[in-house]
Amino acid sequence: MEWQKIYQEKLKTAEEAIKLINSGDKVVTGFGCGEPYGIERALVEHFEDYQDVEIINMLTLGDSPWCQPKMKGHFKLNCLFASASNRKSISEGDSEFTTSHFYEIPDILENYICPRVSLVMVSPPDEHGYVSFGTTVDYTKGTTDYCEIVIAQVNKYMPRTFGNSIKHVREFTCFVEIDEKLPEVKTVNISDVEMEIGRYCASLIHDGDCLQLGIGGIPNAVCAQLTDKKDLGLHSELVGDGVVPLLEEGIINNKKKNTKRGRTVIGAAFGSEILNNYINNNPSVEMHPIDYVNNPAKIALNDNMVSINSCLQVDLLGQVVSDTIGLSQFSAVGGQVDFVRGATMSKGGRSIIAMPSTARKGTVSRIVPLITEGSAVTTPRNDVNYVVTEYGIAQLKGKTVKERAKALIMIAHPAFRPHLIMEYKKRFKEEPFTKDDFQKFTTELKERSKEKIELAIESSKERREQRKEKLKEEISEFKERRKNDK
Image (cartoon, rainbow, N blue to C red):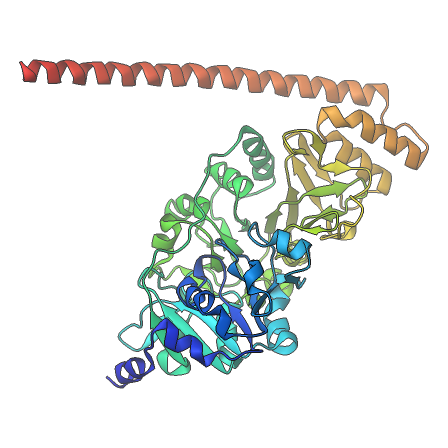
């Protein structure tokens, strides 16, 4: 076939492919589970051959070799989303950080940053000569439309996905075949606090709602408590393994969506093989560029849109800080504001900011009188609807500033409420609660604690019984082996 000839002519080794990159170039790379590490490794190995090359990347799940001291003068990172491996470099000024709402990143890349080279990862070509961008369509696929040089790592482990996720081999500059397992975001154990937060979030979700969930403990805790719902939809910038059981069981079936009915719509998959195997060759899942998935106007086309996002801090006015800690860049705005606004514009929509009430092992309150000096507000107070912690739900829309502050104090950790009440009195020159209000709340809190203790005891008994049964089985197997040995 003609495409096979084209593909073979474009095949190169990684060392040959990177010779297409010049000193002074701006190079944008895929991110997350679709970062082309094979090509990046070749660049790192030959770093001395390059001068003043700017690497533009979003959230990386691996190392950021561009941040190493020896790279100075050769490569410099311009990060669109800070991660563990580059926060220090950004903080010290050795790497750059560009802030933006996620849905605007394709436009910012094309029309403001203007990279000459795009490095991506794709699946092997199909029988028609089309490769798939698999787990990461987001901004990645769009860069291949306008970059002068497009180098693709072809990886058999990249799942083949549908939607706006494919491109013909003729549209790439060259291909490098490197098969390696994709980086994974594995599901970790959900904490009791996260489960409680998930329970409150799930109480705000109704049959037929369309969800944006994200990744991490809280989204997984929400997913675990949606098994009694039906006809849910999914339209999300990225998802993890937690959605797979809901999709397989038909709890998420997208029947009620106004757009892409019957289809799950995502921009990136951030999971393990569990999620990758589910999306592979699955026509019910569509991957689309992020300027479509995260566009608030597109999000709002689905009625009853519910967005769930987390944060680092909320002040008593309802201002949300999600990506900075003081002057330090922790992550990025991402799609939080995109979906908060899209859900707000949606008919019957709701936006939820969910977080544990404390940080640093309970020593710091996430609900504060004033945001930490130097921190940037991620979601303005006027956009915030629901705030959820393990202590309850604070609904802020339509509330006065005093009512907002009271609602947030009520879901703060009890250890920090006295300080918050004191700060409330300083600001508003009045007592926030009557004795009856506080007595009612204290009673509810005691009842909830009692329920938790009873559930914990019940769970402990169940675990003991399970251990006993397992021990009996092991003893029985041991006796049987001894008998056979004789």
